[in-house]
Image (cartoon, rainbow, N blue to C red):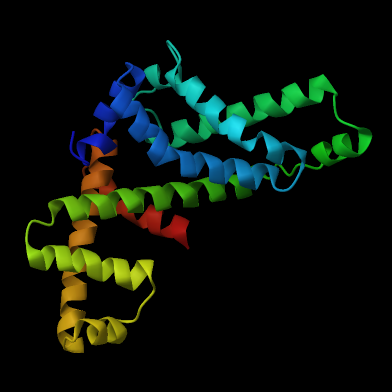
Length: 225
């Protein structure tokens, strides 16, 4: 399974069907999104200690027999992003309700639990940003996979230095002992290649992408603002 296939519904169906490799990829890819949302939801309150167990509970919900992954459909409104958000939110609500019923905490802790912020608009924005970052990582992996020449692989490294290490073009050029103008031209090519890889990844999530891909690109950039 190449990295593009592993971003699409083939991966999700494989994970739902019990494929160990697919499940490992799903867990690795989406755990940062899940963890970011739960950390934002619970902050430094008493439920922060439930974070690791909550992440595992999400994946139990995914992978159990007839679990959540077996029910998701590619054409559902909002696609896999909305599905993932819904599952994580429901697990969080279930854990909050379970803790409230247990009443095992001292009064001060109970007061802190009641103060857990539930600004769903703000939490959705946190989730969306984490999702967008996940998609960007998948696009970077796809670009690297498609890089079949030394020059193309060098452009992948150029983007890593530019955005991963936040180095200016002039510093990269100096490091490479290259002409800055040439590195600028290579940077433009690299960005174009990344965009094609991003569209490739987005298409693998959308069964009928069409013109929606361009809008989804804009939506992702807005989530990262």
